[in-house]
Structures are given as C-alpha cells and as structure tokens.
Image 1 (cartoon, helix red, strand yellow):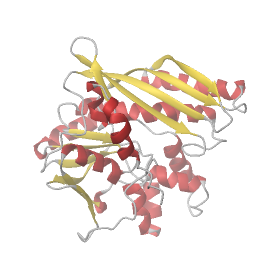
Image 2 (tube, rainbow, N blue to C red):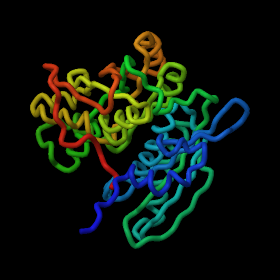
Image 3 (spheres, rainbow, N blue to C red):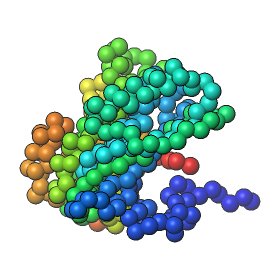
Image 4 (cartoon, helix red, strand yellow):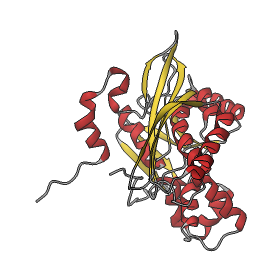
Length: 326
C-alpha cells in the first residue's frame, strides 16, 4: 500500500524546516523577519495564485494582478507591517499575450498608487500549463512590534476585521450556485472574491495591542487554528457573533447552513487577532482610526484546537475546518 501523502504543514516541517534560517521563525508563521534599518525589521512574504485554482482563465487581467498583490499585502497587514515593495515571478502560456500583460500591469499600477508599493524585479518564464503567478512582498515594522502567531494567551478576546463569508459566497455566485439574489448583492460578493481589501491601516494600529494575529486566507477556523497551535492554546468561537455583510446575511437567512462559508472557506483576507480583554477600548479606537469594522467573536482558552458554538451554546460540527493546500 502506498504511503498517504503528507499534508501541507507536515511537508513543510519534514522537508523545509531543517533548511530555515533564524529569521524564518521555524516556518511556523506565515512571514519571515530579518534585520532592516536601525530599529526596524523587514517582513518577508511570498504567495502564489494559479489559474483554475485561485482565479478564472477569463478573469480581467487587472483584477488578477490586484488580487495577487493584495493577498500578499494582507499577510503584511496581519503583522502590522508597512509595505515597501515586491518581486514578481510569472509562468505564462502563449495565450497571455501583450494585450493581457498590458491590462495586468495597469492593475498593478492602480494598486501602486493605492498602497504606495512598487516593483523591485522578478522573473518571467513560459509554460505549457496554466498561468502561475507568484509575488514576494516586503514590508517593514519596528523591531519587536511585529504581530506574530505565537502570543495568544487564555482569556484573550478573539476579534476579526470586516465581514466574513463574502468571498466564498461570491465564488458560489460566479459559479451560478446562488441564483436567487439581487444584482447589487451579486456584484458586491463577486467583487469581494476578486478584489480583497488588505487591512494595512488596521494592522499597523494593532501593534502593541494585539498579542497574535493572522490573515484569514484559508478560513477563520483554520487560520485561528494556526494561531492556537503556535501559541499552545485553544479558542472558542460563537457563530452567532460572526460579522456578516447585508448580502451574506440575506443568503444565510434563506440557507442557514451557509454560515459555514463564514467559518471555514478561504479568500476573506481579513485579520483575526487576539488581544487582552482590558484592551477593548484600544481595539475600538484602532478600528475607528482605520475606518474598519472590528468584531469580538470569541475567546482564547486553555487547551488546543478551535471549537465553534451555535446560538444555543452547542458545539457546531464542521466537516472541514478550512482550505487545504495538498
């Protein structure tokens, strides 16, 4: 019998953790830290997106470019970092011609103005397979102020930014699985899937307040689970407290099981973070200053893993906890 393939994190631990430099944080976080200018660290992050997995072949190239950049900026946001620049690597089939690239570059130019971040360099190669795009983002943060995954403590409050589940429902709408909805709601949800909003303004204001954080790329339960594993704690989430957009709320009201989209599906690119209970005022002030909604959804507890409770306090059983990179 063939051995069962290793999962993503077991694979990282076995094959790549032994190669890691000190700044790699034992590959247990989603960024690396290296010394920068006096009093600062550089925050390093790389993510890739693949045609047919993370975006559709006929998606507007400008949107693809902006999503690629923003999913990386989201990780910098969760660490409290300010973007500096990025490296771009592309594996392109022949169908990605100059017209496609012109639109792609216009997308990056639009977000250069929005986020004040530009290109350092990179590489481009040809492929007979799908389009593969990888971006390595570089940010900066004051030494000792990066918000890592390993600082959560029992008694801390678990917060999330923005609203959850929109991207998953947007993807379902694109695939034609949500026929009964208004045009405005469909447009809103599809945009949330195609163009995430990295919470950079909130992230930098959470330094010195949040004890641990992660961006929600694989789903709230999965990404909070990564924080819990790194911190050696557990967490309890109350499903009734999840922040939902008006569009998502209307869909979930008709189909309550879709609340799982806000718990376990990826692509929200919001921030989940843990902060001491006495810091609630400072959290609220940071959210107001950033112009971003922040909601307390649970608490950090002793133990391990993430439990989700329904409105009656019963444990909500989940068939999956989040997206898995096999």
